[in-house]
Every structure is written in C-alpha cells, then in structure tokens.
Amino acid sequence: MILITGGIKSGKSTFALKKALEYKKRAFLATGVPFDGEMKARIQKHKEERGNLFDTYEEPLHVVDILEKVDGQYDVVLFECLTTYIGNLYYYELNIMEFIDKLVDKIASMKSEVIVVTNEVGWGIVPENKLARQYAETLGKTNTKLSNIADEVYLVVAGIGVRIK
Amino acid sequence: MILITGGIKSGKSTFALKKALEYKKRAFLATGVPFDGEMKARIQKHKEERGNLFDTYEEPLHVVDILEKVDGQYDVVLFECLTTYIGNLYYYELNIMEFIDKLVDKIASMKSEVIVVTNEVGWGIVPENKLARQYAETLGKTNTKLSNIADEVYLVVAGIGVRIK
Amino acid sequence: MILITGGIKSGKSTFALKKALEYKKRAFLATGVPFDGEMKARIQKHKEERGNLFDTYEEPLHVVDILEKVDGQYDVVLFECLTTYIGNLYYYELNIMEFIDKLVDKIASMKSEVIVVTNEVGWGIVPENKLARQYAETLGKTNTKLSNIADEVYLVVAGIGVRIK
Image (cartoon, rainbow over all chains, first blue to last red; front, side):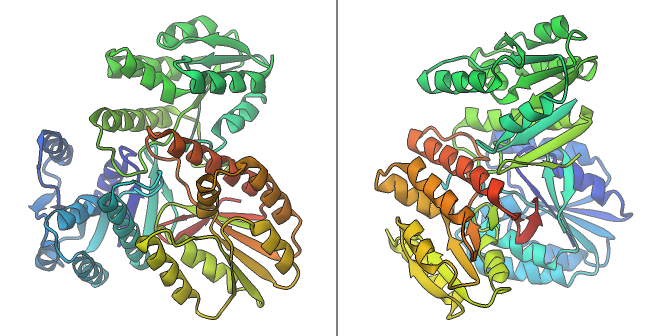
C-alpha cells in the first residue's frame, strides 16, 4: 500500500490522484460527509477533479465493508481520506481504535493496491481543546500504523511528494 | 527562483540570507508592516541581521510594482515573506487570488534570481476560526504554485535546509 | 549528540528508544511533571515502554546538574523531552534563555552520547495566545541551537526517522 501525508492544501490529493492514474482499473473510496457548505464545496471540487476516471464509493464509517467488496476487482483503491474518516468516528462516538485496527488489518491483506491519503495535524501548538488533542494523537498513531505496513510513504510539501519510505 | 519554507523560528530567514549572499547585487523586498510592538521588534531584528548587505524596499501590497522596478538591476531579490504578504492582502480585504496570480506570473518571468521565504502553517489541527482556515488554505495553494515554477525548494527544519526540489 | 524531532504522536519516542538501545549503559532523563491525569498516564506509559532498560533520572528544571552527574558513567543519555522541559521553565517563570544556553553548552561538552527528543510546534497557524506564540518561538530557536551542535538530526514522520543531518 501507499501512504500519502502532508499539511492542509499541500497538494496531497493531486499527488494521490496522479499516483492512482498509474493503475488501470480504479476505485475511489470517499469518506467525506457534506456537513456544511464549505465541506460540500470541497467534495464537489474533488469530484470534478476526478471526472470519470474512477468508480466512486461513498462511505463515512463502514469502509472495511467497501474494501472487502471491491478487493480484487480494481487495480487500485484510492482512500480519501483518513483525516475525515477518523473525524467521522469521533462524530458518531464509535469505538475508534477497534475501527482503526480493523481498517489497518484489512488494508494489509488487500489484493488491490491501496493508496491512503492522510494529514499531518500534530506539528502545531498542542490544542487546548481535549477532543482536538485526542484526535491529533489518534491520527498520528494511525499514520504510524499504516506507515509500518506501507511499501511507499510520501510526505507532500508545497506540491512535492518527498518519498520517505 | 528559489522557494524556502518551514515552520516558525525554523531558521528560514537565516538560511535565506545565506543563500542570497551567494549573489553579488542584492535587493531585499520587505512586506512586513509594524502593526504592533512585537512585529516592530521582529522587523528591527531582521534589519540588523541584514546590515547594509542589501538595498531594502518596503512594500506591503504592491510588490509586483517593486519587482518590475528592480528586475535586472540586481542579481538577487530576497522576498521576505509571503506569509506576511498574504496576511496584508487579507487585512486590506483585497482580491487575494488576483494579487497572487500576478505575483506568481511576475516572479516566473524575472531576469533577476528571486528567493521567496514562506511558511508552513497547515500542519496543525484545522483552526476553528474561518479566516485562519482560509488563510492557511490560500498560503498552502500559493506555496504549491511557487514550488511549481521554482528551480530549488528547501524545507527548513531546526536550521537545516532540506532540499526537496 | 543526536536530535530527534517531529509532531505529536509521530513515533519520536519509540524511534529514540530504539536509537538509545544501540548503546550499552543507558540513562534516561525524564523532564515530565505529572500535572494532571492525562500527563500522569502518558508518563506511566513511557515508563512501561522503557521497562528496566535504562537507569531513570527525573528532573523538571535542573537538568544540567543531572547531566553533569551522569556524564561519563553512561554510554548514552536519553533526554525526554525538550518540549516539556521548556514548558516547565515557562511554568516556573524562570530565565528561559539562560537555562537553555547552559543546557546547550553542557550537551555540547558531554563525553556520553546524548539523544534529545524535541517537537515541531511551529507548523500551524500562529496561535493568538501570546505565551503559546513565545513558547513556539523559544522551542524553535532551541531546536536550531541543538541541531547546530548535533552529529545527527532526524525528523520523524509517521514513525519513519528521516535523517536530515
């Protein structure tokens, strides 16, 4: 699998799209839920960028079921993104580490190549908000778990994908 | 052109100064406006660090005019920095993307070498403040635009300039 | 000396532990003070991870005295971490730069190998809170000072230690 991480608007999604286009049969697993207008606009923009280059699957929570369903049918599954997915788990107050461990296990055993887009959110002043702090820690830990099973890891800075594994 | 990015107090400015001193005729384009005492002290400190090694031009908004004026007259123009420049555009509520696109176009066509100092601000928890969020996105996008036309890009971490392009 | 930096939950501590285990006689200098339950849990977790692989010294402020005491008696001293140490200096309203300069001088002259764990906290939106801003600047400057005297510097991203010096 391939892990792609970086800050806000660092060019991660564009880099991930380009990577995915190297494969022939492509699925896109979208985890974003249009909670508000800002999110809606972002999702719409992403959709237009992809055009019909991918079969799109939208699922905010039960992503493992989707991965199971599509595994082997596609050359690549682009998972966009871990950041919103973990946000969704917090929003619905689910057992987060259980969901994450299942996701990591599933990804590790997939026949299709999986590209996961995630975020770096822990390089600022530790937030005073406890939930934000826990979220940052959970995302950080999950990034490390995925990086451990990844064949390639890229840190995207100013649109440049720096390969770090 | 050369793009230099990194976090707060990562040593970007010192690294940029050193880079600029490799050139003979040097201009410094300062975008900082001394809004408060903290900013005034920072600008003063930067001035002392530069001494008389540069001809200094101060301009918070119409930087393209300055770049036009100095182009070809200097071997290098050190632009310090994009972070405050975009902050100024927000402060005066100008048409930000129009200003930025003009700046990127101008830099792309300059005869003098241009060194742009910018910041990474999108590696923390997404700020709740909408303006801060938009600012982070705008700066991120602009960094990518400049990185696309850059010959060299450095990410400065703990004083070390890591070349990533 | 070896400097190890990165974001929250990036895997810095685990990477640092692994580095330290390459040496035979090991001391661990813990600067964390269990201010609250969250901090207490974190310290406890770190202790369990280390087991009895290290002799542990706990000191929130007068770390130079400890370094003096242990110097030469151990092959490696793992200093965990600069982030909480500088936080402690702020908390007790001490003369921060004086403490830091003494620390940097001491580390520079040590016979034992020293591994310092620190954090990147300046890659987000500049915090509105003045103290947080000053803290981020102080930590950034200190990271650069230590990086200047370091033989090796690692930036840890998603568990991967990227050597940058």
